[in-house]
Figure 1 (cartoon, one colour):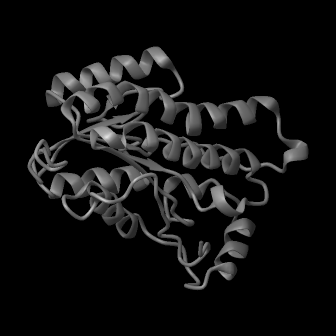
Figure 2: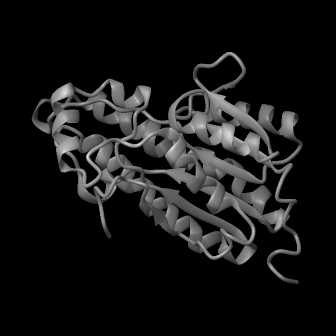
Length: 239
């Protein structure tokens, strides 16, 4: 049997987007909806979303159960829920470190674990994890965030090796700085310095990131991406 024999239609697929009530996650959820897919949004906030705290195992299990009730199955998972705070390492509290790791890394693990067995059984699935270019280059005042996102990239590669044989393809997107509510919480000095570093001279928009998720989930366009990290990042990182 070819890998595409069990693929769902290119529209009408069942998609779960965590952190889908705002920012990059919202743009991705809207892009899949515009493509004709059925989308369940999981978020801590949002009127039309399924409530979830991705750092809490019981909350994740309950939210994914609700998503299955809504969708019937899960074909595609986009892990976009995230937390971004700023502190130099020498001033960082353990609580700040732990909160970032629990949301930005452990949350990805918990959500991936909820869908892998189902996707293996279906012999088709796509998992797209939102990382960051800071996973590759680091960032001043963002050691906790950089470490968490580097963990996401490593998790993506390892899980991709475990699941590719069942046509469950796992990849990540590592955006550069994007104009989102998440980035709004970072200091203006940091943002001004970052803009000067970028070859494009500007931050990206969520609409410029969302098509990368559609590519990774597409058939045949996404069928050869396994454990890859794609970087819509304004030239901030050139691997």
